[in-house]
Length: 218
Image (cartoon, rainbow, N blue to C red; front, side, top):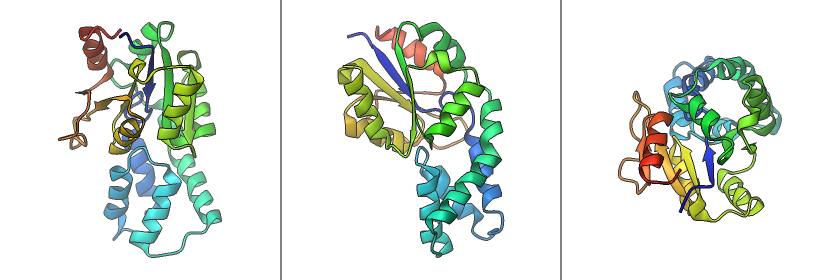
């Protein structure tokens, strides 16, 4: 069966913006130098998770402090300030721009990300990518809910869609919704999908296209 749709995570899948977000976490918690590596590890281990949930984990498990809703929102606003332009300016993952340009008229292409919804829409507009996407979805929606909504609203069968992400949270969302998962593996980081039953792993979107063409899916 031919693919009809692809859902992309954004950071680390469309844009090489993982380091931008990591540095924003370092800057945001620079007043806690002794705990900074543990804080960054929470961020890295929970790729694809909303920043607000990460803040909750960091305060509960590492800083051992209460975090109010107001403080959480302020942290989120400052995080946006630290990384927004960096994400806009981030280069494309190899092959991503070419893939989008080649296939956006042939496939339904979506973005599902842990970035706040309105912020992601703004980034997509600033990067000039609106025409490529049938829909852009961010937090607070969970990725599994986003996938299910995309399936339902576009009358898609599970075997007609794939989700490509670079984190274990992305894998879990695909697994829970029973859609095919492609893992993007970064050169400088451990493979989070080692030992996991995934469709295929790729280093970039150029490899993704080659794999999908080779399997007769597009």
